[in-house]
Length: 165
Image (tube, rainbow, N blue to C red; front, side, top):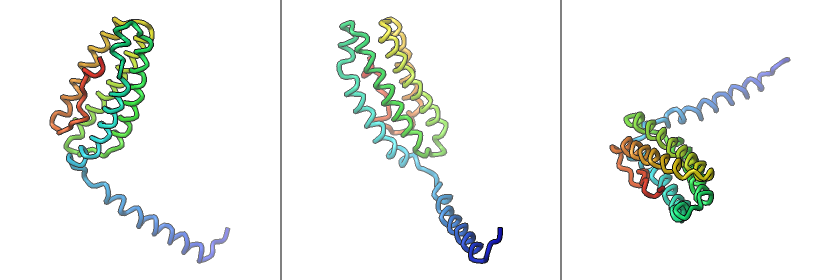
């Protein structure tokens, strides 16, 4: 294959352009501040809190009335919503100083999602006792998640377990 001078120049130009465009991306990896992180994550959490208010509406009454399968749907829907929220939160760059706290917190959020799913499954199977036991574990996990981010001034990202029981 024979390459003429214009093809070499075209390739060199394309390479130079891609390197020039890539340079600002490397500089854009600036440190995220705690305030910036909170400002970006709080609206995500707020959306989830509002969704959970709708999702869990009537759940307690259904479970108390013995309509466990009907009550289970609330927990399955909440698990799905929280999974989407976690993905959005994970996409936000974290401040290096809070990396360990936030990694732990996100891990505990995955635990919340898992407990929602397990409680939904227990209710769907008609096992109210198991669902109650899992609810206690969910509350403990929620408290641990809140403690992990105590140093951050979150409002909506703190979990209120009383809304799930």
